[in-house]
Length: 152
Ligand SMILES: [Fe+2]
Ligand SMILES: [Fe+2]
Image (cartoon, rainbow, N blue to C red; front, top):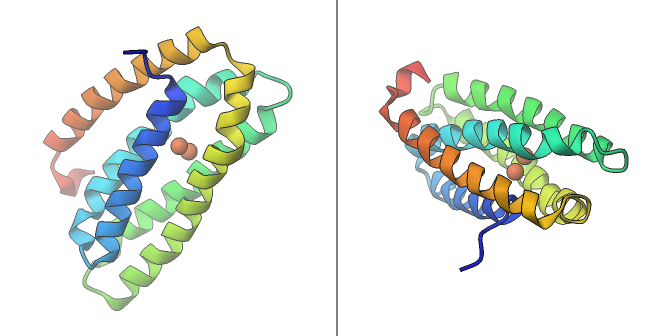
């Protein structure tokens, strides 16, 4: 079986997170902490492994920095959602607004940034980064699951 590229790994992770968002919207706010763990890890690894490469490439730099800025905004909203009482009516309203921004972000990466990254970076590098992403994601998720939710 051919090795997966980091782009394939990131897309797979996007879909896992979309599934979690759907569950939360079906009135399961208790799943939010799990989504936050996934997104925190996703942002870190996407930035360290992929965006760090793209930030140095002339034609794609702005797009890559835009993705990074969107992570910054999403992270602020994640903290607000974490601290806001989940049993309050406004929590789900806030979550839906967050989801609109998240959905825009994931779609933009998939439709614009990732195809450009596939063009700019060579296949071997994309595969090496894919392997690193899969390993680090697994390690960090299992470490995050052991952390008490209150401390996250
Ligand atoms: Fe992202
Ligand atoms: Fe992403």
